Image 1 (tube, rainbow, N blue to C red):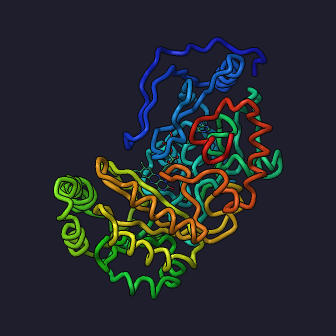
Image 2: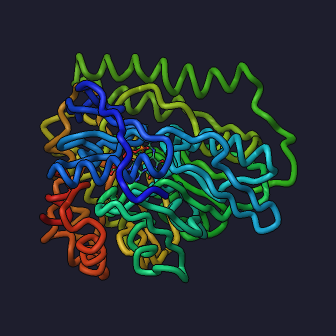
Length: 442
Ligand SMILES: Cc1cc2nc3c(=O)[nH]c(=O)nc-3n(C[C@H](O)[C@H](O)[C@H](O)COP(=O)(O)OP(=O)(O)OC[C@H]3O[C@@H](n4cnc5c(N)ncnc54)[C@H](O)[C@@H]3O)c2cc1C
């Protein structure tokens, strides 16, 4: 690793925007492939008193990735992947997307134990915000991390694990991009597996009455509540030995591409134009959903394409608070001056020990609220946030929230420990931006 900064070309100013289109920035971009290029870029920014924000694939709804100065984009270096098949440990460049990672793991007969709804995020981006899927026995994706290598705000390259630099490890697995540029990640994987997906419509009251069985009796369970109705769509994924019921290509296209994206996009546009129709559209959507069962490779069952653009807020709650939170949300939706077309997603995770993970120290239920792009959302999200915060909720770092450091500190027992690591690793706030100032403090 060279000690002195290498010359790294900072390109002309370019415009950056996130997936939802609600965060933008214009600034110089530096592209780095090798760790020494990252070191050089960080040292150069620090020496010039400038900020440098590394962006992933821009799938956060918050301004967490919004550059407040220069932007750093990581490329995947050739040959940067190491697979220990016996230990099921895989070391990858942090800029790899989850989709690329899943393909790579499948080629080695491996898989991540759990995934969220999509696979477009970079590995580092997904970890930085505590990205999660659903499953009572599974924490967020960061719980699969065995070791991390990052370039700190002073340009040092640091390797951390549970035994080496453990306090950095506890902080950096969900690091909010505030501690350093993660360049490499070692993930503990599992043998490749198949899932049997089962989807069925149900009544909300029945699902809540049988919640422990639903969550405890399935590897992965979630449900979607349709606003203005008593109806939900329940989804369970369970491990099976064989892929013996694959979804016919036409049915898969019809359900996942046509109904979930094309028809849904049409319904959203109609609801945006004529808000009075939204409760009817929601009720028709809830009734139109049917049951289906299919099997497939784990990542292909966990992740589906999302082409309808939306904005989202998601709160992790103590699991026991879910019925109260849902009841509050129903009252909020009914009283809003605007209409809510997107179903509310409910998921579950295990407790973990990562300092700023939403699941830190408790079994969680997640409630996610969405609005179609271009429709008003702030009164909805703010009212939901008040209810969720009162119940001890923690906002997803990558999804819209209005919290500040003073209100978040009591929600995270290790908040100050995280800040101490931040002070040590990025004393000059090279990685700072307005979002981090709000949620972590200056
Ligand atoms: C359609 C859609 C579906 C989603 N589904 C889910 C879901 O199922 N579950 C869930 O929990 N979330 C979900 N999310 C949220 C998403 O997983 C997170 O916002 C995630 O952080 C996005 O990753 P990214 O690569 O786009 O990172 P970005 O949004 O670009 O960046 C996020 C943070 O990571 C930091 N970062 C990026 N690269 C590095 C690096 N190399 N080193 C250090 N920091 C870095 C950035 O600085 C920033 O702080 C979804 C988002 C969308 C748009």
